[in-house]
Image (cartoon, rainbow, N blue to C red):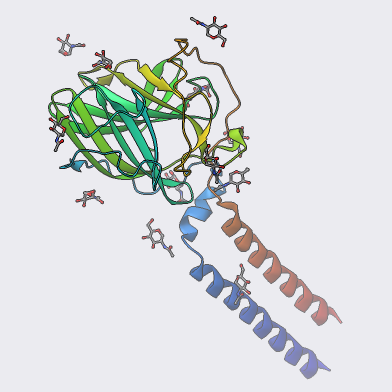
Length: 280
Ligand SMILES: *[C@@H]1O[C@H](CO)[C@@H](O)[C@H](O)[C@H]1NC(C)=O
Ligand SMILES: *[C@@H]1O[C@H](CO)[C@@H](O)[C@H](O)[C@H]1NC(C)=O
Ligand SMILES: *[C@@H]1O[C@H](CO)[C@@H](O)[C@H](O)[C@H]1NC(C)=O
Ligand SMILES: *[C@@H]1O[C@H](CO)[C@@H](O)[C@H](O)[C@H]1NC(C)=O
Ligand SMILES: *[C@@H]1O[C@H](CO)[C@@H](O)[C@H](O)[C@H]1NC(C)=O
Ligand SMILES: *[C@@H]1O[C@H](CO)[C@@H](O)[C@H](O)[C@H]1NC(C)=O
Ligand SMILES: *[C@@H]1O[C@H](CO)[C@@H](O)[C@H](O)[C@H]1NC(C)=O
Ligand SMILES: *[C@@H]1O[C@H](CO)[C@@H](O)[C@H](O)[C@H]1NC(C)=O
Ligand SMILES: *[C@@H]1O[C@H](CO)[C@@H](O)[C@H](O)[C@H]1NC(C)=O
Ligand SMILES: *[C@@H]1O[C@H](CO)[C@@H](O)[C@H](O)[C@H]1NC(C)=O
Ligand SMILES: *[C@@H]1O[C@H](CO)[C@@H](O)[C@H](O)[C@H]1NC(C)=O
Ligand SMILES: CC(=O)N[C@H]1CO[C@H](CO)[C@@H](O)[C@@H]1O
Protein backbone atom coordinates (compact mmCIF):
# COMPACT_ATOMS: atom_id res chain seq x y z
CA UNK A 1 0.00 0.00 0.00
CA UNK A 2 2.64 2.45 1.08
CA UNK A 3 4.76 1.70 -1.96
CA UNK A 4 1.82 2.06 -4.32
CA UNK A 5 0.84 5.48 -3.02
CA UNK A 6 4.46 6.53 -3.10
CA UNK A 7 4.64 5.39 -6.72
CA UNK A 8 1.39 7.22 -7.45
CA UNK A 9 2.81 10.35 -5.88
CA UNK A 10 5.96 10.21 -8.00
CA UNK A 11 3.86 9.54 -11.09
CA UNK A 12 1.52 12.46 -10.37
CA UNK A 13 4.43 14.81 -9.66
CA UNK A 14 6.01 13.80 -12.96
CA UNK A 15 2.71 14.47 -14.74
CA UNK A 16 2.37 17.84 -13.06
CA UNK A 17 5.95 18.72 -13.92
CA UNK A 18 5.42 17.74 -17.53
CA UNK A 19 2.20 19.71 -17.77
CA UNK A 20 3.88 22.79 -16.37
CA UNK A 21 6.83 22.26 -18.67
CA UNK A 22 4.60 22.07 -21.71
CA UNK A 23 2.78 25.25 -20.70
CA UNK A 24 6.04 27.03 -20.00
CA UNK A 25 7.37 25.96 -23.37
CA UNK A 26 4.28 27.35 -25.04
CA UNK A 27 4.53 30.66 -23.24
CA UNK A 28 8.12 31.09 -24.39
CA UNK A 29 6.88 30.79 -27.95
CA UNK A 30 4.30 33.48 -27.25
CA UNK A 31 5.70 37.02 -27.53
CA UNK A 32 7.03 39.25 -24.80
CA UNK A 33 5.84 37.91 -21.48
CA UNK A 34 7.58 40.72 -19.63
CA UNK A 35 5.07 43.20 -21.00
CA UNK A 36 2.26 40.87 -20.05
CA UNK A 37 3.42 40.61 -16.44
CA UNK A 38 3.28 44.38 -16.12
CA UNK A 39 0.10 44.64 -18.13
CA UNK A 40 -1.96 43.29 -15.26
CA UNK A 41 -0.98 46.41 -13.33
CA UNK A 42 -1.70 48.76 -16.23
CA UNK A 43 -4.07 46.96 -18.61
CA UNK A 44 -4.94 50.16 -20.42
CA UNK A 45 -1.57 51.39 -21.53
CA UNK A 46 -1.07 51.63 -25.27
CA UNK A 47 1.59 49.16 -26.30
CA UNK A 48 3.29 51.48 -28.76
CA UNK A 49 6.08 50.17 -30.92
CA UNK A 50 9.45 51.88 -30.61
CA UNK A 51 8.92 55.49 -31.61
CA UNK A 52 11.76 56.82 -33.74
CA UNK A 53 11.53 60.57 -34.16
CA UNK A 54 14.45 60.81 -36.57
CA UNK A 55 13.38 62.56 -39.77
CA UNK A 56 15.42 61.91 -42.89
CA UNK A 57 15.46 64.11 -45.99
CA UNK A 58 12.66 63.72 -48.48
CA UNK A 59 14.32 64.27 -51.84
CA UNK A 60 11.31 64.06 -54.13
CA UNK A 61 8.12 66.04 -54.46
CA UNK A 62 5.00 64.25 -53.31
CA UNK A 63 2.78 63.57 -56.30
CA UNK A 64 -0.80 62.51 -56.88
CA UNK A 65 0.15 59.82 -59.40
CA UNK A 66 -1.18 56.99 -57.21
CA UNK A 67 -4.39 58.75 -56.17
CA UNK A 68 -7.38 56.55 -56.77
CA UNK A 69 -5.08 53.65 -57.63
CA UNK A 70 -3.14 52.59 -54.56
CA UNK A 71 -3.71 55.70 -52.47
CA UNK A 72 -6.63 57.54 -50.98
CA UNK A 73 -6.10 61.29 -51.47
CA UNK A 74 -7.61 64.53 -50.29
CA UNK A 75 -6.54 68.01 -51.33
CA UNK A 76 -7.31 71.72 -51.13
CA UNK A 77 -8.04 73.07 -53.68
CA UNK A 78 -9.73 69.91 -54.96
CA UNK A 79 -7.37 67.70 -56.96
CA UNK A 80 -4.51 70.21 -56.82
CA UNK A 81 -1.06 68.96 -57.80
CA UNK A 82 1.32 68.81 -54.81
CA UNK A 83 4.36 68.21 -57.00
CA UNK A 84 4.51 71.74 -58.37
CA UNK A 85 5.00 75.04 -56.61
CA UNK A 86 1.90 76.75 -55.33
CA UNK A 87 -0.67 76.60 -52.59
CA UNK A 88 -1.79 73.02 -52.49
CA UNK A 89 -2.63 71.14 -49.31
CA UNK A 90 -2.51 67.43 -49.91
CA UNK A 91 -2.70 64.21 -47.94
CA UNK A 92 -2.64 60.62 -49.13
CA UNK A 93 -2.89 57.31 -47.31
CA UNK A 94 -2.00 53.82 -48.39
CA UNK A 95 -2.75 50.79 -46.25
CA UNK A 96 0.32 48.70 -45.43
CA UNK A 97 -1.47 46.23 -43.20
CA UNK A 98 -4.36 46.38 -40.76
CA UNK A 99 -4.25 49.70 -38.96
CA UNK A 100 -0.88 50.72 -40.43
CA UNK A 101 -0.75 53.28 -43.23
CA UNK A 102 1.80 55.17 -45.27
CA UNK A 103 0.98 58.87 -45.17
CA UNK A 104 2.07 61.68 -47.47
CA UNK A 105 1.40 65.22 -46.34
CA UNK A 106 2.13 68.46 -48.15
CA UNK A 107 1.06 72.01 -47.46
CA UNK A 108 1.93 75.65 -47.08
CA UNK A 109 2.92 77.16 -43.78
CA UNK A 110 5.57 79.25 -42.10
CA UNK A 111 5.13 76.98 -39.07
CA UNK A 112 3.64 73.55 -39.36
CA UNK A 113 1.16 71.46 -41.33
CA UNK A 114 -0.85 68.63 -39.78
CA UNK A 115 -3.26 65.85 -40.62
CA UNK A 116 -5.91 64.95 -38.07
CA UNK A 117 -8.01 61.82 -37.68
CA UNK A 118 -11.31 62.20 -35.90
CA UNK A 119 -13.88 59.56 -35.14
CA UNK A 120 -16.63 62.17 -35.15
CA UNK A 121 -17.50 65.19 -37.24
CA UNK A 122 -16.19 67.61 -34.63
CA UNK A 123 -12.56 68.48 -34.48
CA UNK A 124 -11.22 68.01 -30.99
CA UNK A 125 -11.86 65.54 -28.25
CA UNK A 126 -8.25 64.33 -28.46
CA UNK A 127 -8.13 63.64 -32.16
CA UNK A 128 -5.00 61.85 -33.32
CA UNK A 129 -2.86 64.44 -35.14
CA UNK A 130 0.39 64.04 -37.06
CA UNK A 131 2.40 67.26 -37.29
CA UNK A 132 5.27 68.25 -39.59
CA UNK A 133 6.89 71.50 -38.53
CA UNK A 134 9.45 73.77 -40.15
CA UNK A 135 12.29 73.70 -37.65
CA UNK A 136 14.80 76.15 -39.14
CA UNK A 137 14.50 74.68 -42.60
CA UNK A 138 14.18 71.00 -41.75
CA UNK A 139 11.16 69.00 -40.68
CA UNK A 140 10.49 68.18 -37.07
CA UNK A 141 7.82 65.55 -36.58
CA UNK A 142 5.30 65.41 -33.74
CA UNK A 143 2.39 63.26 -32.80
CA UNK A 144 -0.23 65.17 -30.89
CA UNK A 145 -3.79 65.15 -29.61
CA UNK A 146 -6.16 67.94 -30.58
CA UNK A 147 -8.61 69.01 -27.93
CA UNK A 148 -10.43 72.34 -27.58
CA UNK A 149 -8.38 73.87 -30.39
CA UNK A 150 -5.08 73.06 -28.69
CA UNK A 151 -2.48 70.55 -29.82
CA UNK A 152 -0.90 68.62 -27.01
CA UNK A 153 2.29 66.93 -28.15
CA UNK A 154 2.49 63.33 -26.99
CA UNK A 155 5.07 61.84 -29.34
CA UNK A 156 3.85 58.46 -28.15
CA UNK A 157 1.67 57.51 -31.11
CA UNK A 158 3.14 54.67 -33.15
CA UNK A 159 4.89 56.18 -36.18
CA UNK A 160 8.13 55.58 -38.01
CA UNK A 161 9.98 56.10 -41.31
CA UNK A 162 9.56 59.87 -41.19
CA UNK A 163 10.92 61.86 -44.09
CA UNK A 164 10.52 65.55 -44.69
CA UNK A 165 11.55 68.62 -46.60
CA UNK A 166 11.03 72.36 -46.32
CA UNK A 167 11.18 74.60 -49.37
CA UNK A 168 10.36 78.14 -48.41
CA UNK A 169 6.81 77.73 -47.03
CA UNK A 170 6.19 74.38 -48.69
CA UNK A 171 6.42 71.61 -46.12
CA UNK A 172 6.36 67.97 -47.21
CA UNK A 173 6.56 64.86 -45.11
CA UNK A 174 5.95 61.14 -45.38
CA UNK A 175 5.63 58.64 -42.56
CA UNK A 176 4.16 55.33 -41.55
CA UNK A 177 1.59 55.35 -38.75
CA UNK A 178 -0.51 52.81 -36.96
CA UNK A 179 -3.83 54.59 -36.60
CA UNK A 180 -6.19 54.00 -33.70
CA UNK A 181 -9.13 51.67 -34.07
CA UNK A 182 -11.99 53.88 -35.26
CA UNK A 183 -14.67 51.93 -33.48
CA UNK A 184 -16.95 54.95 -33.22
CA UNK A 185 -17.42 55.20 -36.97
CA UNK A 186 -18.57 51.59 -37.12
CA UNK A 187 -18.36 51.17 -40.87
CA UNK A 188 -14.71 50.27 -40.61
CA UNK A 189 -11.85 50.20 -38.10
CA UNK A 190 -9.95 52.55 -40.41
CA UNK A 191 -12.64 55.15 -41.21
CA UNK A 192 -12.07 58.68 -40.00
CA UNK A 193 -13.14 62.25 -40.50
CA UNK A 194 -9.94 63.59 -42.02
CA UNK A 195 -8.61 67.10 -41.56
CA UNK A 196 -5.64 69.11 -42.78
CA UNK A 197 -4.51 72.19 -40.89
CA UNK A 198 -1.60 74.55 -40.45
CA UNK A 199 -0.34 76.80 -37.71
CA UNK A 200 2.59 78.61 -36.22
CA UNK A 201 5.68 77.01 -34.76
CA UNK A 202 7.55 79.42 -32.52
CA UNK A 203 10.15 78.57 -29.93
CA UNK A 204 9.28 74.89 -30.24
CA UNK A 205 5.61 75.53 -29.52
CA UNK A 206 2.78 74.54 -31.85
CA UNK A 207 0.21 77.29 -32.24
CA UNK A 208 -3.50 76.51 -32.51
CA UNK A 209 -4.27 74.80 -35.79
CA UNK A 210 -6.27 76.49 -38.53
CA UNK A 211 -8.25 73.94 -40.49
CA UNK A 212 -7.79 73.99 -44.24
CA UNK A 213 -9.82 70.86 -44.90
CA UNK A 214 -12.38 69.07 -42.78
CA UNK A 215 -13.92 65.99 -44.30
CA UNK A 216 -17.69 65.99 -44.64
CA UNK A 217 -17.89 62.30 -43.80
CA UNK A 218 -15.83 59.47 -42.40
CA UNK A 219 -13.76 57.80 -45.10
CA UNK A 220 -11.94 54.51 -45.04
CA UNK A 221 -8.27 55.45 -45.33
CA UNK A 222 -7.66 52.08 -46.93
CA UNK A 223 -10.13 52.68 -49.76
CA UNK A 224 -8.19 54.33 -52.58
CA UNK A 225 -11.34 55.09 -54.55
CA UNK A 226 -13.04 56.90 -51.69
CA UNK A 227 -13.42 60.66 -51.97
CA UNK A 228 -13.87 63.36 -49.41
CA UNK A 229 -15.60 66.71 -49.74
CA UNK A 230 -14.25 69.67 -47.83
CA UNK A 231 -17.00 70.82 -45.52
CA UNK A 232 -15.20 74.14 -45.15
CA UNK A 233 -15.95 74.99 -48.77
CA UNK A 234 -19.56 75.71 -48.06
CA UNK A 235 -19.56 76.42 -44.39
CA UNK A 236 -16.74 77.79 -42.28
CA UNK A 237 -17.66 76.65 -38.82
CA UNK A 238 -14.94 76.80 -36.22
CA UNK A 239 -14.83 73.38 -34.59
CA UNK A 240 -15.79 73.77 -30.97
CA UNK A 241 -14.80 70.70 -29.09
CA UNK A 242 -17.48 68.48 -27.74
CA UNK A 243 -16.83 65.83 -25.20
CA UNK A 244 -17.46 62.51 -26.76
CA UNK A 245 -16.89 59.04 -25.49
CA UNK A 246 -13.77 57.87 -27.21
CA UNK A 247 -12.57 54.33 -27.64
CA UNK A 248 -9.43 53.87 -25.63
CA UNK A 249 -6.66 52.38 -27.72
CA UNK A 250 -6.03 49.30 -25.73
CA UNK A 251 -3.48 46.68 -26.39
CA UNK A 252 -4.44 43.04 -26.06
CA UNK A 253 -2.35 42.20 -23.05
CA UNK A 254 -4.69 39.93 -21.12
CA UNK A 255 -4.01 36.70 -23.00
CA UNK A 256 -0.59 36.16 -21.45
CA UNK A 257 -1.78 37.01 -18.00
CA UNK A 258 -4.49 34.46 -18.60
CA UNK A 259 -2.01 31.78 -19.67
CA UNK A 260 0.02 32.45 -16.57
CA UNK A 261 -3.02 32.20 -14.31
CA UNK A 262 -4.15 29.15 -16.18
CA UNK A 263 -0.81 27.42 -15.65
CA UNK A 264 -0.73 28.30 -11.98
CA UNK A 265 -4.26 27.17 -11.31
CA UNK A 266 -3.65 23.94 -13.20
CA UNK A 267 -0.51 23.22 -11.20
CA UNK A 268 -2.46 23.94 -8.04
CA UNK A 269 -5.23 21.59 -9.11
CA UNK A 270 -2.75 18.83 -9.81
CA UNK A 271 -1.02 19.35 -6.49
CA UNK A 272 -4.38 19.24 -4.72
CA UNK A 273 -5.14 16.05 -6.57
CA UNK A 274 -1.86 14.51 -5.48
CA UNK A 275 -2.48 15.55 -1.90
CA UNK A 276 -5.97 14.08 -2.12
CA UNK A 277 -4.55 10.80 -3.39
CA UNK A 278 -2.03 10.69 -0.56
CA UNK A 279 -4.82 11.12 1.99
CA UNK A 280 -6.44 7.90 0.74
C1 LIG B 1 -0.01 26.31 -27.18
O1 LIG B 1 -1.10 27.24 -27.18
C2 LIG B 1 -1.96 27.07 -28.27
C3 LIG B 1 -3.03 28.15 -28.20
O2 LIG B 1 -2.74 29.08 -27.20
C4 LIG B 1 -2.57 25.68 -28.22
O3 LIG B 1 -3.40 25.50 -29.36
C5 LIG B 1 -1.47 24.64 -28.25
O4 LIG B 1 -2.02 23.34 -28.10
C6 LIG B 1 -0.50 24.90 -27.11
N1 LIG B 1 0.62 23.96 -27.18
C7 LIG B 1 1.10 23.32 -26.11
C8 LIG B 1 2.28 22.44 -26.35
O5 LIG B 1 0.59 23.43 -25.00
C1 LIG C 1 6.07 48.16 -15.01
O1 LIG C 1 6.16 49.32 -15.86
C2 LIG C 1 6.61 50.48 -15.19
C3 LIG C 1 6.53 51.65 -16.15
O2 LIG C 1 5.92 51.31 -17.34
C4 LIG C 1 8.02 50.23 -14.69
O3 LIG C 1 8.47 51.39 -14.00
C5 LIG C 1 8.04 49.04 -13.77
O4 LIG C 1 9.37 48.76 -13.40
C6 LIG C 1 7.46 47.83 -14.46
N1 LIG C 1 7.36 46.73 -13.51
C7 LIG C 1 7.76 45.50 -13.81
C8 LIG C 1 7.57 44.48 -12.76
O5 LIG C 1 8.23 45.24 -14.91
C1 LIG D 1 -9.07 52.38 -19.04
O1 LIG D 1 -8.66 52.87 -17.78
C2 LIG D 1 -9.60 53.74 -17.20
C3 LIG D 1 -9.04 54.25 -15.91
O2 LIG D 1 -7.65 54.27 -15.94
C4 LIG D 1 -10.90 52.99 -17.00
O3 LIG D 1 -11.87 53.87 -16.48
C5 LIG D 1 -11.40 52.44 -18.32
O4 LIG D 1 -12.57 51.68 -18.12
C6 LIG D 1 -10.35 51.59 -18.95
N1 LIG D 1 -10.82 51.16 -20.27
C7 LIG D 1 -10.67 49.92 -20.70
C8 LIG D 1 -11.18 49.62 -22.06
O5 LIG D 1 -10.14 49.05 -20.01
C1 LIG E 1 15.71 55.95 -36.55
O1 LIG E 1 15.52 56.07 -37.93
C2 LIG E 1 16.68 56.44 -38.63
C3 LIG E 1 16.33 56.64 -40.07
O2 LIG E 1 15.28 55.82 -40.47
C4 LIG E 1 17.75 55.37 -38.45
O3 LIG E 1 18.93 55.74 -39.11
C5 LIG E 1 18.03 55.20 -36.96
O4 LIG E 1 18.93 54.13 -36.77
C6 LIG E 1 16.76 54.93 -36.21
N1 LIG E 1 17.03 54.93 -34.78
C7 LIG E 1 16.61 53.94 -33.97
C8 LIG E 1 16.95 54.10 -32.54
O5 LIG E 1 15.93 52.99 -34.39
C1 LIG F 1 9.15 70.48 -56.28
O1 LIG F 1 8.48 71.42 -55.47
C2 LIG F 1 9.15 72.67 -55.38
C3 LIG F 1 8.42 73.49 -54.36
O2 LIG F 1 7.07 73.33 -54.43
C4 LIG F 1 9.15 73.31 -56.75
O3 LIG F 1 9.83 74.54 -56.70
C5 LIG F 1 9.85 72.38 -57.72
O4 LIG F 1 9.76 72.90 -59.01
C6 LIG F 1 9.22 71.01 -57.71
N1 LIG F 1 10.00 70.10 -58.50
C7 LIG F 1 9.48 69.51 -59.56
C8 LIG F 1 10.41 68.57 -60.29
O5 LIG F 1 8.33 69.70 -59.94
C1 LIG G 1 -1.90 78.43 -43.49
O1 LIG G 1 -2.34 78.36 -44.82
C2 LIG G 1 -3.02 79.53 -45.27
C3 LIG G 1 -3.57 79.25 -46.64
O2 LIG G 1 -2.55 78.88 -47.52
C4 LIG G 1 -2.05 80.70 -45.25
O3 LIG G 1 -2.72 81.88 -45.63
C5 LIG G 1 -1.50 80.87 -43.83
O4 LIG G 1 -0.50 81.88 -43.81
C6 LIG G 1 -0.88 79.57 -43.34
N1 LIG G 1 -0.50 79.69 -41.94
C7 LIG G 1 0.77 79.81 -41.56
C8 LIG G 1 1.01 79.87 -40.09
O5 LIG G 1 1.68 79.84 -42.36
C1 LIG H 1 -7.97 64.60 -23.66
O1 LIG H 1 -6.83 64.09 -22.97
C2 LIG H 1 -6.52 64.79 -21.79
C3 LIG H 1 -5.24 64.24 -21.24
O2 LIG H 1 -5.18 62.87 -21.39
C4 LIG H 1 -7.68 64.66 -20.81
O3 LIG H 1 -7.41 65.39 -19.64
C5 LIG H 1 -8.95 65.19 -21.46
O4 LIG H 1 -10.05 64.97 -20.62
C6 LIG H 1 -9.19 64.49 -22.78
N1 LIG H 1 -10.33 65.10 -23.43
C7 LIG H 1 -11.30 64.40 -24.00
C8 LIG H 1 -12.40 65.19 -24.62
O5 LIG H 1 -11.30 63.17 -24.02
C1 LIG I 1 -11.63 47.39 -33.53
O1 LIG I 1 -12.63 47.37 -32.52
C2 LIG I 1 -13.74 46.55 -32.83
C3 LIG I 1 -14.77 46.71 -31.73
O2 LIG I 1 -14.18 46.78 -30.48
C4 LIG I 1 -13.28 45.11 -32.98
O3 LIG I 1 -14.38 44.31 -33.33
C5 LIG I 1 -12.22 45.04 -34.07
O4 LIG I 1 -11.72 43.72 -34.15
C6 LIG I 1 -11.09 46.00 -33.76
N1 LIG I 1 -10.16 45.98 -34.89
C7 LIG I 1 -8.84 45.99 -34.76
C8 LIG I 1 -8.06 45.96 -36.01
O5 LIG I 1 -8.30 46.01 -33.66
C1 LIG J 1 10.70 83.06 -28.14
O1 LIG J 1 11.54 83.06 -27.02
C2 LIG J 1 12.31 84.26 -26.87
C3 LIG J 1 13.25 84.09 -25.69
O2 LIG J 1 12.85 83.03 -24.87
C4 LIG J 1 11.36 85.43 -26.66
O3 LIG J 1 12.10 86.62 -26.56
C5 LIG J 1 10.42 85.50 -27.84
O4 LIG J 1 9.47 86.52 -27.62
C6 LIG J 1 9.70 84.19 -28.06
N1 LIG J 1 8.91 84.30 -29.25
C7 LIG J 1 7.63 83.92 -29.31
C8 LIG J 1 6.96 84.11 -30.62
O5 LIG J 1 7.05 83.43 -28.37
C1 LIG K 1 -14.66 52.65 -51.60
O1 LIG K 1 -15.22 53.93 -51.83
C2 LIG K 1 -16.07 53.94 -52.96
C3 LIG K 1 -16.49 55.40 -53.18
O2 LIG K 1 -17.01 55.97 -52.01
C4 LIG K 1 -17.27 53.03 -52.68
O3 LIG K 1 -18.13 53.02 -53.81
C5 LIG K 1 -16.76 51.62 -52.41
O4 LIG K 1 -17.84 50.79 -52.06
C6 LIG K 1 -15.73 51.63 -51.31
N1 LIG K 1 -15.16 50.31 -51.19
C7 LIG K 1 -15.14 49.66 -50.06
C8 LIG K 1 -14.47 48.33 -50.10
O5 LIG K 1 -15.63 50.11 -49.05
C1 LIG L 1 -23.30 76.07 -41.45
O1 LIG L 1 -24.19 74.95 -41.59
C2 LIG L 1 -25.08 74.85 -40.54
C3 LIG L 1 -25.94 73.61 -40.75
O2 LIG L 1 -25.32 72.73 -41.60
C4 LIG L 1 -25.96 76.10 -40.50
O3 LIG L 1 -26.83 76.01 -39.40
C5 LIG L 1 -25.08 77.30 -40.34
O4 LIG L 1 -25.87 78.48 -40.42
C6 LIG L 1 -24.04 77.36 -41.45
N1 LIG L 1 -23.12 78.45 -41.21
C7 LIG L 1 -22.75 79.28 -42.16
C8 LIG L 1 -21.80 80.36 -41.76
O5 LIG L 1 -23.13 79.18 -43.30
C1 LIG M 1 9.28 36.78 -28.79
C2 LIG M 1 9.20 38.19 -29.21
O1 LIG M 1 8.35 38.60 -30.03
N1 LIG M 1 10.04 39.02 -28.63
C3 LIG M 1 10.06 40.43 -28.93
C4 LIG M 1 9.81 41.24 -27.67
O2 LIG M 1 9.95 42.63 -27.95
C5 LIG M 1 11.24 42.99 -28.37
C6 LIG M 1 11.30 44.50 -28.49
O3 LIG M 1 10.05 45.09 -28.38
C7 LIG M 1 11.50 42.30 -29.71
O4 LIG M 1 12.79 42.62 -30.15
C8 LIG M 1 11.41 40.79 -29.52
O5 LIG M 1 11.53 40.16 -30.78
